[in-house]
Image (tube, rainbow, N blue to C red; front, top):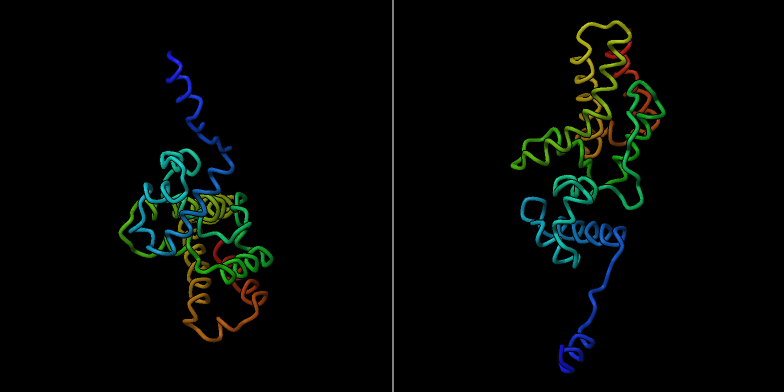
Length: 198
């Protein structure tokens, strides 16, 4: 290598290395902004990567894909992803669900799972979350209690809960919208218990 090549190599900026946490957060911030500006369907992973100044292939690595990134991006800042199954017969847990949905801009996971839309990948990802956290544990509980049609009962309880929280969020029913979260949570738990308990 001649002196000129060495000088040019020495002057070239070294690429800035980011840690994984920083890159993941930059992707999440860019996704939130772009989804808000353009919506899910009109936002590409390349645009997210460009805005974040991160290789867009990292979306698959950190989040599993665009749909999972979307579901992560619509949670309120600092709200941890739920990993424990939801006990639909617990007044306290149903009240927390009602409160959490009321505090977010939408009920994105439930909404993405149950409303028809063009993106099958997003709907499948949202349904997988609801299946893992609500339907599967509720099915096991109903089966353990010796109830017939355990899966159907669990799906009906999940549908009832989704209907209540989404209707409350939309303001479709004034009394439901105005009711105290504790009251809604308690009544919703009783409704679900009527399906999931002997």
